Length: 309
Image (cartoon, rainbow, N blue to C red):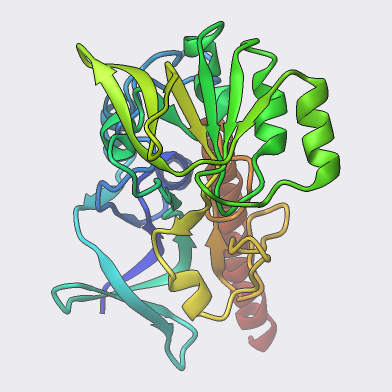
């Protein structure tokens, strides 16, 4: 059995930064990466010093080189299940049936946004349709912005977007999640509400121009921000019995440890501030914590052996 120090599931900024930290600690690591990054279609990364506007694919390419530089390995395979054996070793299996063994396990698979199933949303996702104002509102400042929130509350997002544009409209797509006090806030801030059902997004020459309602109205719009929840890309941490929040993300301590000994979670799957720079920082914390735990285990074993002599 080839026993690794750590297996990392997820090749986004959290997993790759952890891999670099552990590689520099001379640990034997293996990263599994399916390429299903949450920001894959983004027009550019933001809020990351020295990496402003870099394409996500370019960022990943740079990160891969650094992981390999420090001895890490990356496999383009999907892990479908995992367990702990009687020796407390983590055993994970890929979709081809091959098993891998490690002393520690880091899950950094992230989340997928639930893009509304309305014609145009998927096509414009990452270009004119977004979920995070801190990531993308600067690029559409002073433009006509719509907030889509049918089954979730979006009034706070609508209020926040007023910091980037005075032209904000709230679309419920037939939903009824707005409370009277929330409507009062929206009214006071000049945000109109349209409760009609949405037919599609309309464009001209590749640019978003209107939200078309099923009743026939065409609302001028140059960008849409949506609140529609997200889905974990992998339920492995939950399958191990990790504690979860009501939002469906894994509970971790400040060192990214879960309630399962030896199992760590970093990135979007562990917290609800979904920035690339935060995910990378969590990966770095997880890497340090994993290395310290491995060091402690070796020191305690050697101490116990010395006591027996």
